[in-house]
Every structure is written in C-alpha cells, then in structure tokens.
Length: 613
Image (tube, rainbow, N blue to C red; front, top):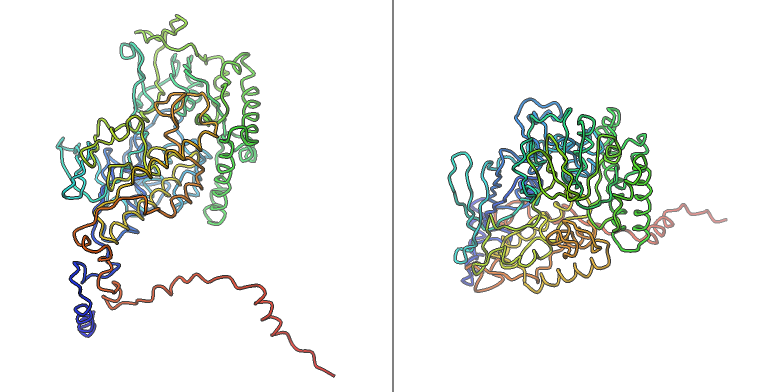
C-alpha cells in the first residue's frame, strides 16, 4: 500500500471508531484458526486438500497412526516407495499382497474424488492396490502430504472451556512418547473400517493351525493344497472365497446369516457390453480414449453414478423398484446356484433386497458351487486345536482359519475418549445409541466435526458423500473465522429433530425389515438405523448445501462480546486496505437468461424492410 493510501485511510478509521475491538480490521479479514484432523484416509486426504484451498489463515495438521496415507486401503496394502509405473509425478507403491481378492465393491470410476477422475483404472471393480496408488497420487498432486504427520496415533481429546480449544493426546510411534497438541477445531476422519476384531468364538486362539484375519493378513500364507475355514460372508468373505477356491484343497465357508449377493450389483447392463465378464478389464484402447477425452471420462462416470441413484429407489418398501430388484436377484441366484441342488433354498434370505448391504463380488456364486467348497450354516460351537466344531456337533478339521468378520462399526470411543462440555464424554452422549446433528456434529462437543458419523453413510458412493460433508464443515469453519466466534455446537432440539426425521423416513424402507445388519444399532435385527443417511446421496447434497445457522449455539470471542456486529470492522475490505482491485464482484457475474420474446422482437427489428411500391 502506498503512503498516500495509508494516509487517506488512517483518518477514516479514526472517524469511524466506536471503541470496538475490531475497529482496525477489514470485514473479510478472517481470524487465524487451527484445525487438527485425525486420520489420513479418504476423508483426511480430502481435508488436507480442501481446507487449505478454501480457508484463509489456516494452521492445519493431519495426524495419522500409519506410516502413510490411505486409511483402510493402506492397512490392507503395506508398501514401500520406488519409481512409478502409473503416475509419472508420484513415487510408485511396491505393494505386498493384502487379503486375497481385495477390491472395491463400487465401480472404480465412481469410487474417486470428483476433482480427480482417473482414466486408467484397470478393472471395473478396482483392486485395493490401485486404490491406494490413486490416493497417494492425489496426495502428492495436490500437496497434501506436507500437512500430514504419520505414526501419530490419536488417544483422546478434551474440550478446554476456559481456553475455548481442544487438547488432543497422541502417541508418537517413533519413540513411544505421549504428546499433546491444541486446536480450535477437531475433525475426526477415522472412519469405521479401522478397528478390526477377532470373532468372539470359544477356543479361537487355541487353534494349532494358521489363524488369519482379513484385516491383518500374513503375506507369507499360501493356500495351495490346504483345507480352509472362512468365517463370514460379508463384503470381505465373498471376495476371499472365490480368490482362494481354485488353490485350496477344500473350503468350509461358515455363514451365520443369509445375504443377497450380486456379482455386479446393479450393473448387469454395463457388464453385458463387455461380454458379461463380471469384473471386466478396461482395454488399453478404452483407457486411452478416456484419457484423451475428459468429456467422455466424465460422461462414463456420470452414467455409472446415475445407475446407483436409480438403484437407490429400491430402498422403499413395496415399490416397483424394490420388487424388480428382488425378482431379478432371485432369478440370478436360482440360476447360479443350480449346480448344487438345495443351495438356493439354503442361502436365499427371507427379507427383501436392501435390508442389509448388498454383496457385490464377481465370481463368488460360481465358486461356492464347486466341489471343493462346502457351505456351513449350522453355526460354530467352538474352535478346537485341529478345526471347528459346529453346532451340529460335527468337527471339521482344517489347516487354516480365516476370519472375515470385519470391523467394530459401533462408533464407540472408549479406547480414545473424547470429552466435551461439562466434562461429558462422547460415549455418554452416544448412550444408548450414537446420534449427531446431520451426522456431522454431536451435541456437547463444540467445534468437533465427524465424517460419516451416525446416520452419515450413503447407500451409494462414499467418496462423494465425504466431499459433501467436507464442504459443509468448511462453511462452518469459515463462519467461526468470519464472525470471530469461539465455538459452535448444535442445539439438542435440532439434533433430536434430525433423529426423529430419520426414524420416520426409515419406517417406509426395507432397512427396518427383520435382518441383522451393521446399518442398525448393535447390529441387531431390531435395532434402530444408526449408520445410513436418511435419504439418497443427492438428497444429502441438497441438505448440506445451505447450513441452518439457527440450529447452533455460539460462544463469541472477547473481541465481539460487546456487539454481534463488531466483526464488521472498519467498514472496509482487505482489498481496499491493501490497495488492490476491489471489483471482484464483476469477475463472475450471473447473467440472467434473455426472454425469448425480447430476442424475437430484436430480430424482427433487424429484418430488412420490403420496399413499398
């Protein structure tokens, strides 16, 4: 700013002074704010990109317990670095084998950030190694790694009322030291697929053979010629069985509950175009065409996501979409399981499609009709040193037991306590069941934001939902900055209304049918729906677009306690204070459409006139 500009503004400030603490600040001069994000999976990576992009005066640290970014995809793919075969700008990932068959059960082109469409996915359902490579590419392309501190494990957080800040406790793995950090805002991006658990089966750890968990796979294990027991038929179990079936001598697949399984989800027409291959490989020509034509790449992604949005309509009880989906899957199951008489009747669920997550695993149905696979539905009484004793009192000896029993999805924070207002823990707030305002903000927890919190999971592509939630969080942080607010916390009645809305919505859907599911509290068949968003993905988009600021309680910073408009400052903007261009409002003008009648009238006026005779 020139001396002339300084001299001309100084008396203006003095004339406008009314003794308010922010008299010398511009209206858009955002206060500094510190944010701590816990976790560097898909949500944490996005935070490390979007928060610095859109939030001024930001001090951001992303703490991650692992040695690199990627979350659950990192944990299932231990890695080292080398030169990259796929992304020339990023180091390559030399990936060790994770559990056999690991992949995404959403089409690759729908399981990525909206701002980074990858034309080079090898398969319709990408293998886990490619997803991790993609995430590392995104981290490096957008400069997110500099905000990340790895091998720092979150151990808990406490809201300090007097300071108006969070104190965060972490365990630094490199030296075993407990350290502390403080922040104005905490973003919990830990997800639900990070706390794997052994099944509660008597005698499990007395087994003398090889005991494996899908989330903690031993890369040296070779299934060739072995007899195996695979416990669980969720998303992981139905990937492991077809991957190991060709190698194993025998597989006993233990199934606790029936489930609808579709090789391709709602994408039968798409795969039919590729010769009905259930997980087809994109040809080099197809990848080149998508790479050279961004419009075609976007159109391909839109087509895939439109299928998901249409499929969502099957969630409504007794709807045509629901009936059609059930009929289609029943016909498919009957056909695929026909080689083994009685298997269809054994596996067909009594509840409708959509009551629990639809399993999508290419090759699974074909694998379980093979002679070396037995389906065991009697349940497990206990594990013996040599195998598994079923509730039918038959002991089935095996060389290895593979637990595909998933993760703890309860959202409990007992091992990582979070203490909010009045010394109340998040676990207590979430007793008897987890609840949060719009799934993002629990009560009694100022400036705490959650990705995919209670009722936050979409029945569609998770990555896009995370982006919508990130946008919402950014708007909240910007409000704290702009208006010089110390904290914001949702009103209890606003949270309660959201929960009541969700319960009423789900009453008209198949999610409340009698099936045990992680969608429900405690995984009980009669539990409340506590995992899923009460609406479609695009419904959530519209909800998150415009925050309802009246649903929050605020604490002002001392600078604004005397007047809620103190943040209006000196009556100027930053651009005026700096002497830079102040006409940004002319850069992106929303020009309204011209009335067709006006255009027609103008056209007539310019028509050549006929000469009169």
